[in-house]
Structure formats: C-alpha cells, structure tokens
Image (tube, rainbow, N blue to C red; front, side, top):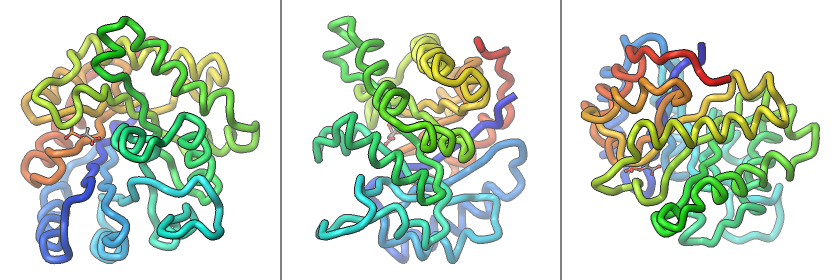
Length: 264
Ligand code: PEP
C-alpha cells in the first residue's frame, strides 16, 4: 500500500509576511492528519523561511526546479546542492510551466532529475500532454517520450538513487493546470497505469512502490474521486495549496480515501 503524498506548488506567489501567516496556518491545520506525507514547494528566496518554520512539523518542503548543471558560470541558476543546504526534501522537475516558458526539454529535465538525486533530494518529475496533443490522439505517446527521458536516459547508478530516494512522478495534463477543468478520474487513472507499466519495464520492484501523483486543478470538491483511483497516489496542488482550508481538506480526503488494488 503506497502512502499518499500531497505537495503544494506555490509557483511565483508569496512574500515574507504572507508566507508566515500561511505556513503558520498550515502547521496548525495539518498537525493532526495522519496516514500521508505533506509538503510545500516554495520559491527559492523563501526556502530559508520554510526550513525555519517547518522543521520538526509533519510538513516537508522543497523547491520548484534546479539547474541541470552541478556548478559553474550560469548566472541566476540555482544548483541542487544549493537547495540541499536548506534541507529540502523535494524539487519539482520538468513542470509544464518550465517546459513552456523556458523551453525545458525532455533531455534537460532528465539532467535536472539526475542532479536532484545526486544532491540527495527526491525529484517530483512532471509529465503531461497539451490539449492539442490529446485531441490529436497522441497523449500516451507524449507522456511515454517524457518518461523515456528518465527511464532510458539515466545510468544505472542514478536510477538506483531514484529508487532509493523514492522519486515521484506527477502526471499533470497541461490543459488541466490552473484551469476550470480537470482530467476525469478514469482518464487520469489510465495515464497513471501507463506510467507505472513503463517504469515496470525498467524496474518491476520500483514500479510497485513509486508514487505517481496527479496535478491539475485539484480542489476539495474533486479530490475524493481522483484519489480513490488505484494508481493515483496523491496530488500536486497549485491554486488550492495557497488556501490553507482547501489544502487541509485535500490532505484529509487523500488520507481517508480507500483505493482499490493497483494494477501492478
Ligand atoms: C501545478 O501547478 O502543478 C498545478 C497542478 O496547478 P493547479 O492545481 O492550480 O492546476
């Protein structure tokens, strides 16, 4: 049985004062929820604040990206070892907003994934198709190619680290992010099965334990149906993670949802 994981993606929102209020509220709201893992991924400048406020609580923290390089003359870039200095548990890698805005490719996302692992941090590797790709009937092909970047592109040592650090996959259909629509639970489940099967071809044991979480306009209203799917092991939550009551409800629903046995 995989433990549910709920991660808030704060994107480029927040400020010192606002964060203090939100994080204090989250600590209070999530304190008594058992049976799942919770985290927030904040903008880089607030990692120190997150570390200071969240240490010793049941909420982990992380960043939203890392450089594909270890170090060097890369002005304004942030390396994985730099975020490790703030005790980050997670880094979101290959988010569709990074792929779209900064042209992060499958190959560079795979390099960021590897850097994250070598710094001892668990990557949350995002995959997902656009609406045009879904309409063209190539959603599965797109997600397969995105997954291949890490399944075929990593050496054995890095892949072992992925298993050891419990790398997470987030299926996030681009058309459902920050939108009024979400993937239907069976649509999402079918993509999660595909992802798990692809992982099983490289490593059957890892496929059983890897957490594949769903992202795309999850709210307290739709969380129950989504998290009851057998291969959906939690959520990557954007907008609703900035509302402490909504985030609390989503975490509660995730921890109380009974899913049937997974396909693998
Ligand atoms: C996200 O940014 O990863 C996300 C899923 O956002 P939202 O929940 O707002 O759709």
